[in-house]
Amino acid sequence: MIPCTLSTYSDLTDLAVDTIIDVRAPSEFAEDHLPGAINLPVLDDAERAKVGTIYKQDSPFSARKIGGALVAQNTAAHLQGPLAGKGGDWQPLVYCWRGGQRSGAFTTILDQVGWRVRLLSGGYRSYRSLVSKMLYDGPLPHQLILVSGGTGTAKTRLLQHLETAGGQILDLEALAGHRGSIFGATASEQPKQKMFESRLASACAQLDPNKVTWVEAESSKIGDRVVPPALWSRMCTAPRIEISAPLPARADFLCRAYEDLTDDPAQFGAQIEQLRPYHPVELIGQWHDLAKNGDWQTLATGLVRDHYDPRYAKSAARSATPVRRLELPDLSETTLQQAAQTLLSGAAPA
Image (cartoon, rainbow, N blue to C red; front, side, top):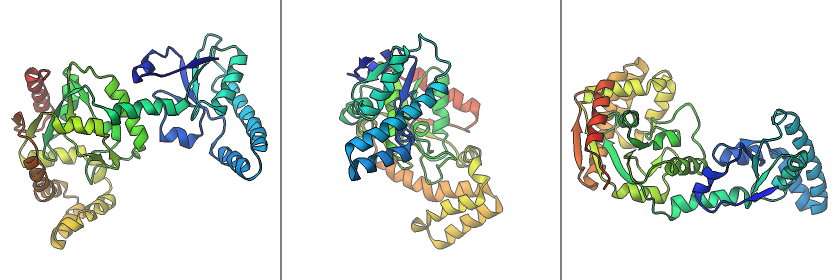
């Protein structure tokens, strides 16, 4: 058994192990885990709760005895299942919540098998402290340029074109699993806040601080996920470019980008209801009728013109003047590709 200590976040890239194993319960793993880790729980959620109850209501000794038997059974299942094909040269890193009994017991058995096992000192908590240090204590060293513009100006798609053309991007909506508006939910549930921060920390660690990083000008919340303060403060002071396009082109783009929502008129109607506090009853009714009739182009036009654009105008008025404005004639892939190349040719580190 070889103790492993993480002193900085960059130590994660130098682990030189074949597999990272999280032996915590599935619910703990689902909330957050080390990048690339797999979950081989030594106690599932029900077993963990059972052992905890015995510990509190009976005795620590009884809890350890029952817990030890369960850990042995589950470890045997892992050895005969996911780990059955691992050769003698396989080198895993194992961790639990704080590097205590669960990971210690699992590591001991793997070590006795003959594998060179690393045990993460401090467990998941030591990793989480590094993520918190990066995203909460800051400041981040990255040179950001924000891509701003009204709803439907294809900012996320432009980011993807920037990346394809060789630019460096940070796609917050992809990391948060949300498109950043009332209508922005996707079929997949958003990651928990800690998981979002883990994804964000991993993405930031792979960015070159000496190069410009393009980021969409999001609000401080993306769906239910909150942008951590170190990144948010960097975004608030970053220069921004502003994209504009004709309203018909924006409506057409939204119909294509949100096609998944138009396949479910009932769900779309429920999301329109969330706008009721901001608009007259008659307008909400019109939007409902358009959704029921499948007139998505007219509905998208109305939502942008009457809901999103007025709010964007107020937000833009409070922001610093954009360093560049780019007016696009349409939002075709060719136009977005050309826009990305134009932006990259004029971008330079601050």
